[in-house]
Length: 207
Image 1 (cartoon, rainbow, N blue to C red):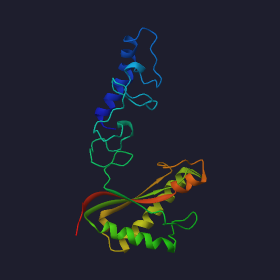
Image 2: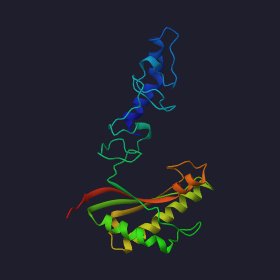
Image 3: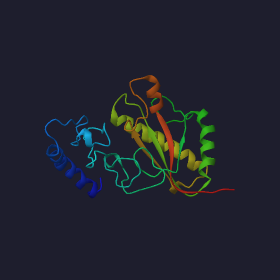
């Protein structure tokens, strides 16, 4: 977290409760326990532990809609960002890309969708992309992270073999860290086991 966000967090955690107490007659309520009385809180239901402003809203230094305490890129005020506050020009979902069980070996039926992804990526000049692997929460977290990385690398290798610049594409495994669905259901776990291609930079060429 950036030093400014850290300072703001410290100030919020120490000063806001005192300010709230000073402005109350002893009967003020603070339903989300962020140190700002409900009657002054413009963002009720703030996540527990999130540093807030004097109006009870989470700090968002780059005004991208992602609170500082969850923003992995707190200084990138991009027009479009992902759920973690980082620039994102395009995210290519690959629902038909699959692997052998507990393996990073691509199934043959994955090739059609990967070939389509290659064509989408070729439309960008000065491409900068990340292949991101994800798993559900079952099993060992370290194993899941390693497997997700190997699967992301397998997809990256396919893209490179198809002619894309290897310097423009990275691979990263997030394991179970970034779920998009409920891991308590089979449907949710299926959605969380995924590989996506995130276009982080470049210019889309138009014909």
